[in-house]
Image (tube, rainbow, N blue to C red; front, side, top):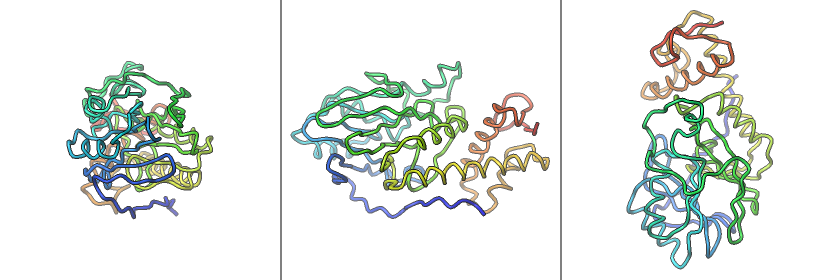
Length: 300
């Protein structure tokens, strides 16, 4: 029986308004709903007076104005970027110009792959480079708040989560989302790194996870275990295809995602490719030539 992930998709949003979520956390959601952003990008504000802003969001004048209203009379000290997709980091420059603060992140788009000599596609925010590059375990301190940086590559190679120690809360960007699974799209997306990052979070003990899209995950450990089990089932399905002589990704997608809306099959193809690349790295599959969407794949 397939693993059931306890997604929550009930979320009331009033665009342009600030929500008080906890003693230290507020959220303003951008009006950019889509199949990939759910109700929109949730920009978090942490603290009072001197504050931190997490994932400013897309380059959108209305969202910038909403953040300015929410932060009236306060000073931005830190701007934390989980990763550099276009719904997360582009507004950082305009926010910084208006309200100040330094930007923090792992690095520019694709930086995690660049360190391995791999060039990624220009699909993200290529203009962003953090003022301060942070590594796993780094601490960022502010007025009444302390963040621990938790490096979680997989969705992107530069994905960073941030633990708010005062509330035992983890801001998970797109690494863990309460409403949907995460898209893993090579070459920057990496299924092997993603799975390792999920297991890494299982060793931690945060009480709540705040994704950039959708509602919080209030029982992190069971949720993480369900995400891991789901991906392991997908991997087993890919291996079964290889065993049965399916050598090309479109054939595998048609079999594995037969009950899924065909409009989602292009994204499913990237997910299957990510699984195949993981299997090749582990010596459990091989490709004729480069392991790309059009290649033929075989079991070992």
